[in-house]
Image 1 (cartoon, one colour):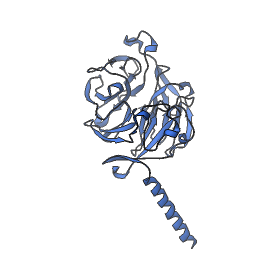
Image 2 (cartoon, rainbow, N blue to C red):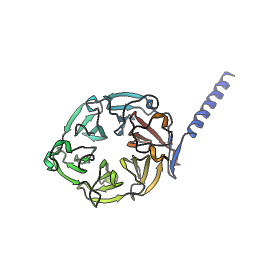
Image 3 (cartoon, one colour):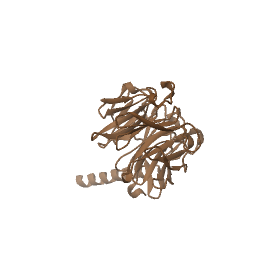
Image 4 (cartoon, one colour):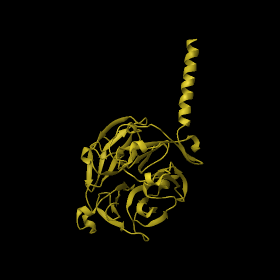
Length: 332
């Protein structure tokens, strides 16, 4: 009898868990649907500081994200339990963060708007190098004109840095961090950029391409490593901030209240995820927790993807929020 009761209890508990999962918000299109993990993470109740940065997922499953506090780099496990923090010297401006492979090891590549520099750090917090403003480019009269927002590394070790909040240039450095060239310039015509906010290095198919979130021109650009624009798309984009690649798709954190999925080959929209219906709540930093809704983004800013396709999205919110989106089985 005891065994039977235990079996019944376990069955009922499993049923309750499955019912709770199915009641969570779902968004997407055929082949690309995601479930919003309601209640994931301690930030649902406790402020963690402004999450004006990025998200990166390590191969060991840790999810790294940024805040503007002395816990500038925090990490959590897949269950949303905070495991630790570091980087107090990076408070107030750690804006860009990606995980790169360097000498066979995973490293954090960090971009700071206030310090106006890029640095590389081990996953346990040792700073390996720091790169300051590109005075040698001849584009700046003073350091304060340079406000980098994102950096990525090519397979050959060369470095690309977006001056997203400064002069809207993208700078290229060689593997020894010597300045090589730049492209862009603030504007709306042709090859001009207007807030190249986030960068992504796409190495699919064995050919490296630089993807630029040209935010205030409302477009994505795919470029070769000399900065030549190969393709561009404005389809379904409001103000793209950062992106990742998941299989055959680009997944874009769009500041104006949603995440957009595009076919990576054609750069055509596949799905819009969890779009905030109220325009007054989009792209806002000070929205109180009482106005947060499960299944509706406010200001997506950073995005990371796990090996199983789970997405993690950090929002530009003063008290801090990171959202977990689980890709549904079979994508349906």
